[in-house]
Image (cartoon, rainbow over all chains, first blue to last red; front, side, top):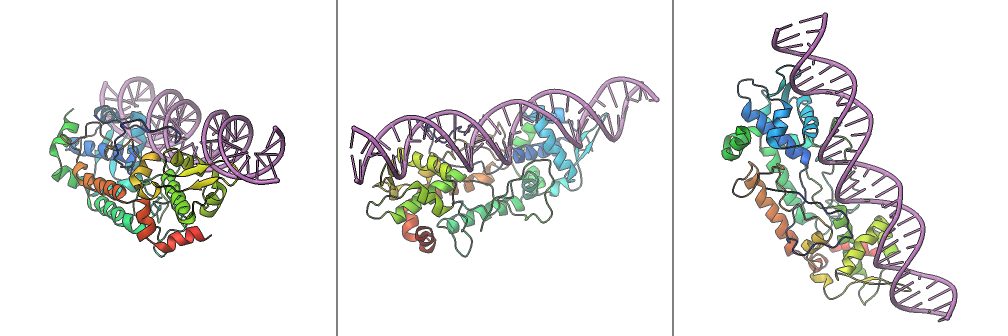
Length: 170
Length: 170
DNA sequence: TGATCAAAAGACATTCATGTCTTTAATGAC
DNA sequence: GTCATTAAAGACATGAATGTCTTTTGATCA
């Protein structure tokens, strides 16, 4: 069971025992929900079967209306199909499995800070790099590569079938 | 010149030509300002010389009052010295140069999401990993290692002296 | 001592991501 | 055609990070 705690005030002292490990948010909730949603639909809608938003949100225990917005966005972009009305719902299409995580990240708005300097320095760039530029740039590249080279289909085929099954089974 | 653009609405379509590169915020503005501030103070206050907040904020072109809060935090944690009143200001102390970036990241509150799953899945953990768990975990570790193994002093000694000079010179 | 200066502290504003609810539109069942 | 059902659309609420301003505290200088 994972829970995300966000500190409220920069002035507030850290609690004792706070683990000294850092990993920023990096990828947003929108992204996480989107990916979970697509994986669930893809794994559960084999024969053109449609899955309703209610079912998806309930299964994934994710905020229903918020997920709705995210799914709508994916449908609009053609990553998923959606049909209104009776027996409507979301389903996969030809492109779903070939969609990269990078595409998903773009759609969920992770991106426009793409060259945000770690120092938040106005003057940092390749020619006048900040002291951290060369240290962090390779790591950023690796993230990009990983996201760009992994598709929804990859995750369904090769990775953690248990997890997918546990999502799809409920 | 770097500028950070943040999208407003998840429903808003992406503008055409949006570069297909992803790098999340990863480290906050607080962190960036803190690091810039410390580097500036450290590089400009050789002989116990104190630097005023006004000067720092102006030089770095960083929001003055916001930076004030960040610096206050650093002072309270002993990473910097601060003196009020006439000829007061911020200066380095014995621990400044030995402070790791991880410590800075802790102080600026990057942290409490440290095991935030990329999928934002409630059920993701080492024993029941989500499909991305094993892909992203090593990258997260690398970030941690990089932050933990780099000190303020390292940056001043070994990295990009031009950048430091350009900060300190103004 | 009193005036002045600079950081500390705290109140308040703004913006964005996230989350919730209501209304509209489209599709299938009858 | 009407009704039920379901996603789309849009209005609104909340919380956290960021940003600004005012008041307080503590130090120095005259």
